[in-house]
Image 1 (tube, rainbow over the protein chains, first blue to last red):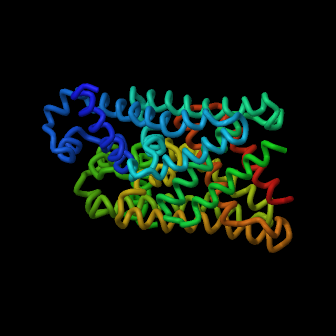
Image 2: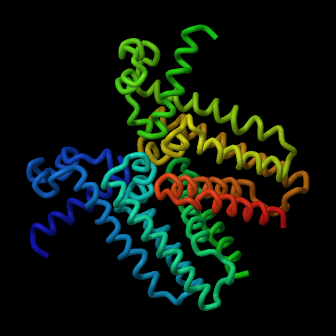
Image 3: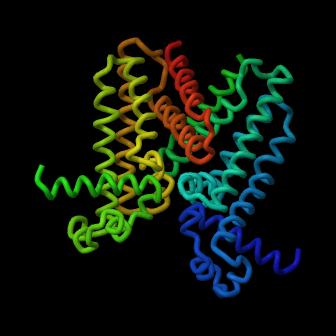
Length: 196
Length: 196
């Protein structure tokens, strides 16, 4: 990796952590420069605009998500083991130290839903891809007879997303110590309904 | 209602609608003064600080929520009719014209979860009260033998919250036309599990 690339990765990793706390719109080139003790003009040369920085933070977080959650889970056998790996790794991602404010996509979702523009468009694209990974993994389980034929993969994806959002809400905002064990029970109930 | 009170209510109603789109931290006395064609100093005299304004917006939205969602639902018979009324009215609230950006509490939750202070504290209090209303309504259904004795009211409350957050996410961010019908199916599945 060239030096410029390493610097860029360091900046983006820090920026994603910051965005998990202050939101993507709270992320400014100035604040980032202060945190990293870099010059504002140097950072500006890397990213050119706040919007470009925000989009690169989303892409950077997405690449880490693919690496840490999706790719290892897709190595698991189809059906229940794969769905379980997706869920467990997603839960781990949400609690990772690199994202002190929790999932950067969850924070960005309510922040950007009423702000049209290229950053929102990129977030929508990434969220659709992730929901498609969940639905496709579930569909393969149906095709192989591991889940009920009548089970709806998109319904499962929306429901699983809800389990994770409620976990984020109860753990992050309400500091509820039982948020995680409840999320696991919700997941088991979803899986049990798919098996029937 | 005295004139000062009416003015305050008009300001808070508009502020809540604005906060549903730009977030509570995006809500400034300046932007509100521009929107309502009032003087910044007059508005400042009403609210004294941005934090006081934010807390009053939360309290104002909470009073409307009690009026439009909780109070009418609690007039329904215990058990399924009451849970259904809570869910349907909550869904209606989320889509109300007065909140063009959707539920102001959902937007505030991810926005404030990493920002300690009096605004976050008030939001946490209001969210706990609402979750307690859901859990208590469910518990009364259990006590009257309408739901399974083994069903966990706090689990039901977290799960129902997840259904609504996933609805918000799919409808608001992804503009998915099936978000609402899926949310209704998720609710029916939760209720069916409680009945067993």
